[in-house]
Image 1 (cartoon, one colour):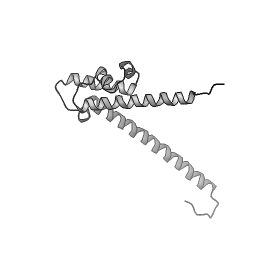
Image 2: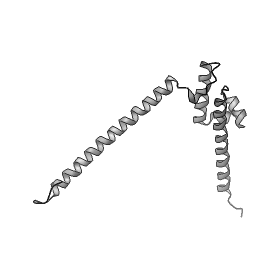
Image 3: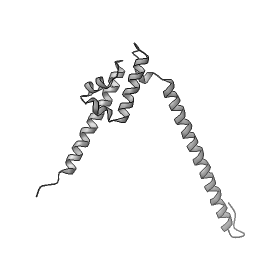
Image 4: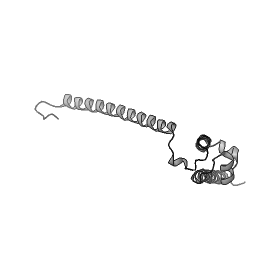
Length: 133
């Protein structure tokens, strides 16, 4: 009977995947920091991964597209993207902050309602002559 090596194979594949991701992310950052045009080809070459694999990674794909498009709009700009703020990114950050504020306001309202109900129940169950909270 053969040993089941499935767990070892899965672990090895997971390690290879994470190594490839870290190489790709590092390549994107280094290319951007150097002021080099960031494209799928340049990232794949620098990271030692295939372009088709880069397209399967949603977060890396979006960052490469964003940096590539940003480089097309501002040719000759050697300022890394982390030092630039586009209108779209600022708008996205504002929308995210607004959504978070809305969630927190709803949480506060829900908690206030729960507190009011709990205090009402305490008062309703208190015996006469007992100090009320």
